[in-house]
Image 1 (spheres, helix red, strand yellow):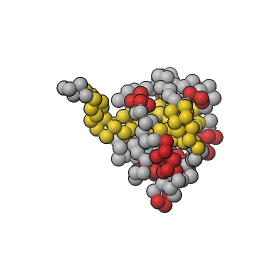
Image 2 (cartoon, helix red, strand yellow):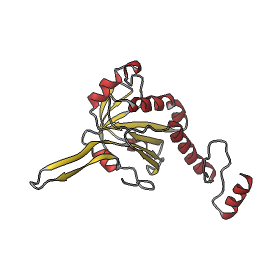
Image 3 (cartoon, helix red, strand yellow):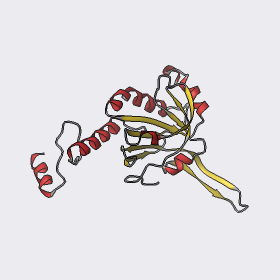
Image 4 (cartoon, helix red, strand yellow):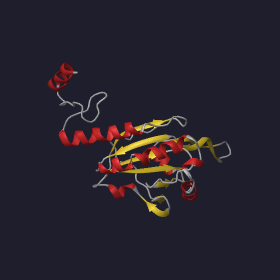
Length: 210
């Protein structure tokens, strides 16, 4: 797995479904650089079971993320046509109808590879034929990207383990607090709780009060 924290988020141009219905080509998250935070998350497959719970959970919080200047962008290795089809299915049928944030189609799997979340490997056999081991789909990777296009937080879950959207929100708020107040966020920090100065005195003062 790649550790991208502190590095520029790998850019890409790929097809995507936006606004729940429109297929576009050459979609890129670099369009937000200088203006917005981005939470870019991968999920394994369309038409599965844990995945729609995550996509709907992000949609439920979408206005809160946008209010903080953050765009949500999803990605899997399925085609844009598969994304579009799933978006036409109702929630009751296991679909993701109502999702309005972009869903990127990583059909070449290069985005997943560049972000270090592809579950599986390519190799050449003794006859120099390309082979693949593993499911060759994306793990549940999530990347918080700042306004300079730098990854500030990442987490990768195995395929069966869904993520906590509230934790993604907490990390975004922690980053905004750091940038706004110059204070670091200690363990279990959440909005409204005390942060601290990144000094020995700041740590001592925080620990004495908590």
